[in-house]
Length: 127
Image (cartoon, rainbow, N blue to C red; front, side, top):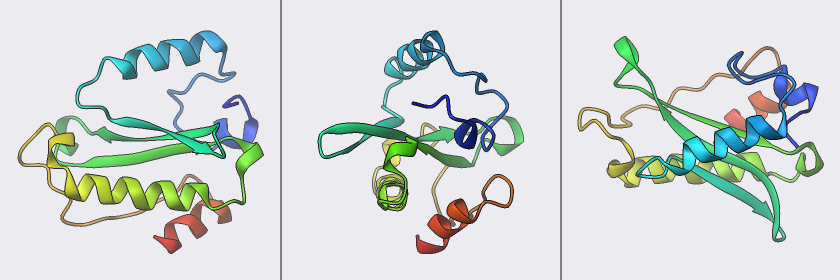
């Protein structure tokens, strides 16, 4: 599902490419151990469509958090990414326990996307 060039070519280099079943299992196991939960699954009509999460940054960026997501290509164009990012932003603003450092508070949202991708930019413009 995530092993799609349009997804892998527009994300962090730390994501294995190709993305194997073993990579997915390792990712799920790592994320399942985190408390509080930082990642959430996205469903469309009871079918798994992707995931979204928050990553707390490190070092000099430790007072920052980043929302990242992916939507399976099968579900593109349905507004799922926009809905998910809006909901996750709301969760981050309303649930400070998600943020492990009491100094991290989402006072300001800033947005960026990988490359010159109109679909990513249009999602960010809507939120």
